[in-house]
Length: 420
Image (cartoon, rainbow, N blue to C red):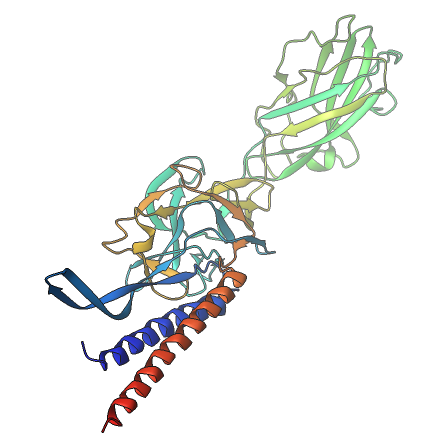
């Protein structure tokens, strides 16, 4: 090979080092880009000529070239945000988003998502996040990959109260009394209030009075105010239900549970009659300490609308309603690939599948090796600034060395031209 070929070797070195510097610059410029994955440029040699002689083979190189620019898919640190719809993957996998106009699928680690004006769960570019929807009851998952859409104006229907759970301690030291509905406060030892809901979801206040009537025997009486009853008189209570509970000498409940709570015969002021309601006093005790309520729950609720959406570590989007209920809406889908390096960058922290990456493998968070979801968090760039600066110094020195090859070759040619 001629001496001038060293010009091209030096030039190839300049080109490869310039490309490497471009990759480093891209990494550093994206050090604060959410979900960004850094890249590394890899060099390969170029064979210039193969000479052979009596002493064997001899090859000379013709410089270098960039063999590949590969992504680094190690996980970045997780940063806490105050946005409930932000999500990060802790482990393997990519979020799946779809371009609504072309139905083209992309994959990303950047989980800065929001709910748009049509209720779609979207990224910053308006691409729709993909997942699996729950049925209307929020219990069964329909495992077809689709857009996640949340109707924030939807209303969950009311549920009538059918069961009440109440755990108390009733003070054994109380003196027995005779219950009088016309003097509930004066003829009871303890009282607590609760709310029940009718079939329309309207609430009604019920006051429950407990009266010790004999040793180991307590009567309970549930009253509603006359203002909430058809034909009732405001301020005059009417019976909603009544019953008796018995205890053994160890203070343990002996009456079978549950028992009927509504035993009256009333119609609420809105024209709705109460439905069958049971009450369960299981674990209620009669000990020598002050009467108190420990647990009070009932299964009814009013109609409600979506107040906010939260996301759990399994990737479930959960709607929180104004009536205090929660219902699963959808579950995020994650994708993985046989060969991550084969993914094609498409900008906006998006990747696209290629024949080199292999087909995407879809699953749900926490299943099949997929990572879990961290809500109100975002994954930071995985670029290591210290490592990038060290690479920059090495690349700069390599670039300078290649320029030295070119200037030295130029000097050699100048000397050749001066031969007389």
